[in-house]
Length: 463
Ligand code: ARG
Image (spheres, rainbow, N blue to C red):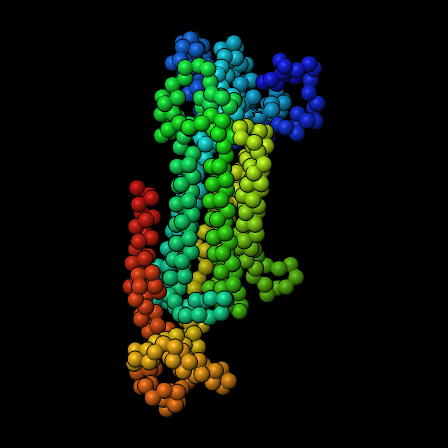
């Protein structure tokens, strides 16, 4: 059996080690990118006078034929393909099989080191938009739920203790805000990869007069890498992509966790659709949020891909080392896991229903304590003093197992003579959210504008 590098060696390499080093099982995913890169490279070679027109045409014809064949998965599973070291070897062998000697000229002045750096960039450029769309779909479902929630109230939590009343819509839009950042972060990866690595050769550059500026434009890059040594060993963009995926998974996981909690018997603010839950083989009453738990679990795995990849890179001398081949499984797995998790989360979220009464009930009571303090502040009591007065009142109510709404005016006034009949109306969840003033707050008008803004963003993406 022969390899792309057999000439230097006497006899065949150890079969088990060849198998250990081969990446075709997973890097076949770069097939389309590899062929497109080679098509452009052949044109650049012709422009540089390295390939004659006949050879260039033969190569282009052969590569186009390969692209067409690539639609059939069986193409990658022939006995010969099973022996190929990587996708580059596969493409070259198939090309030579079709066009003979011309195919053997394609690799002139080029190295797999820069080729794989190019393929990874082209792959991400082709695939990141799909993840961006999946994130946007999830934001769309969050916006839909925010719209459906209308003016419904629920408690917000800090330290997982009831904090202040908020609109349920505000809660949904909070998650949407995090996913908007993920969308931006993925878009930034597309900027990171926007430089052509070809022309770097194996490490020192190429000795042929390749017009890399033309080649960059031909392949849709805005520019060319600055340094060939750096370019062949640089996978920062893989780390950036993994980071974007890991953080997006953290956000899907936090959304999953909120939904797991809030659909539980203990909270009961939302109900899971039957289609989004599973039962127990033993306990007939159970309705388990398995898909959400899996999403939460898979976040750990994508974080691991990022951490693992950073660990792989940290010890590498500058330039290409075979360790870099480990980038692919990390990247593909992170991509697949994020895509599947976004879709699962969107599907579960689409089916949840708000129990307005349960959520509203939980949004009133002692979590209105800040509003009581604000009432006193409005009557010129310094906030610290108001805090103490209300603290004492809360302590008493807790002792008596009561809440603000059970207090008579007389009882209110025992804690401060400033309380008047209007305190009852001031201390409700609805009054609390209405009193908020800032644009990022849970004030109903602010939330309505925020929802409009999200819808505008979504509409802008579709244009
Ligand atoms: N399969 C290799 C990778 O993914 C391609 C580059 C191989 N280059 C080399 N000199 N062995 O990194």
